[in-house]
Each structure stands twice: as C-alpha cells, then as structure tokens.
Image (cartoon, rainbow, N blue to C red; front, top):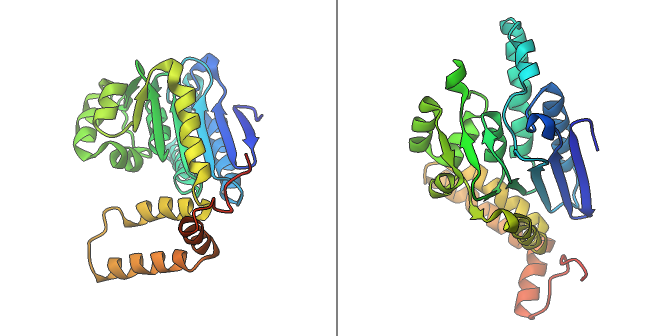
Length: 263
C-alpha cells in the first residue's frame, strides 16, 4: 500500500488499484497523481499482467480535485499551474497507454477529474444510482487535461452538453451514451467485475494487449491504403507469433490453449 493507494495483487495475472482516501471522497492531489503514474508505469513493464482493476474505497469513486490542494493551487502562477496540469495529463496518459486492459469499478459518485480517470479505463462497470459530473465550468474552469479521453468515451455530442452545463448525469444516462459499458445493481458490482477479469485472463495475453493498442491506433483514421496495409501487417504478425499459432492449434485440436492458468 502507498500513501494514497491500496495496490493489491490477487494473482500473478491480476492487479488491483484502489484509491484510498475515503475521508475526502478519493479526491486527487499531487500525491495521488504521482502514485497513480508510478503504479501504471510499473504495470506497463510487467509482462505477466493480464488485467488491472481500478476502483475506490468508500462511498465515492473520485470527487475530482482535493479542496486543500485547490487552496494551494489558488496561489500558483502560470508556470506552476502548467506544471501541475502536465502532471495530471501525464498520469492519465500512463493509464491510457498502459498495455494491460484496465477495468474501472465505479461504486460511487464520479466528478470532474474522476470522470477523466473513468474515461481512461478500457471496460467501465458502474453501480446503479451513481452520479457523474463534469463540474469544472461551475468553478470558472474547464476539463482540459481529461477532455481527450472523455470526449472519446462519451462522444462529441454528449461532451458538448455536459462540458458547458456542468450538470450531473446518472449512471443510466452514462450507459445510454456509451460511457459506461455495463450498469449493475450495487450488490452485483464485484461479481460482474470479477467475471470480466476472468474473461480477460482467459484470452491470449499478447493478443489482448495488441487489441487494446489496435483500437487506440486505428480509431478515427481514414480508411485509406496506409490503414489497410497497417492492419494487414498487424494480423499477419500475430498469426505468425507463438501465441497466435498456439491459439489456432488449440482451437483446431479442441484443447485448451497453453496460456490458460491452471484451475
């Protein structure tokens, strides 16, 4: 456990990262940002990992910026504000670009920077009754560093509304716009997250990483000859890999692939 995070390793294939500041609704400060960046940078170098769960202890998933931290930032000059914002941007990028699939477990309200943290997850499961809010405009601010991820996750049209109105929106609304992948009863949240993790662990580990990168690299690109050539190269690479050959042979021979963990 770090100062602000509860990091667990229930198996060699799975890591869990829990925001562990329930007394302040898991709000961000510079310590949280630095520790999340360090944790996911380490995960990126771990070749055994197949899934990461990102959640929060207490009633809220993440309430955005910590009030004490905001009081400190109120006295910052431009250079200090820029350095502070860059640290947040770098942390979000570290999670986004971590090659291991990340499952977000949203058990409670998720505001401001917390929405950005949810947006960088690859699979997002939320409990019914949770509220989201991009509240920055209420404070005379804007959701700058989180915007690339939030816009991708909820879509431009929804972002046009919720960035400027700073309204709350429910988990059901978040699911309807595609931001939340699955909405479950609070008591079913852990079981559903565990099912998704088990599915990830059972997939080809290198294939899952390649699939995550494929979506990030291909989304939004024009359907031109360059893209067609690149996607053909990627499938040829993985078919010719040891894992690809093992997967095809196990399927054809009706046996379990070698990467499956022992029961």
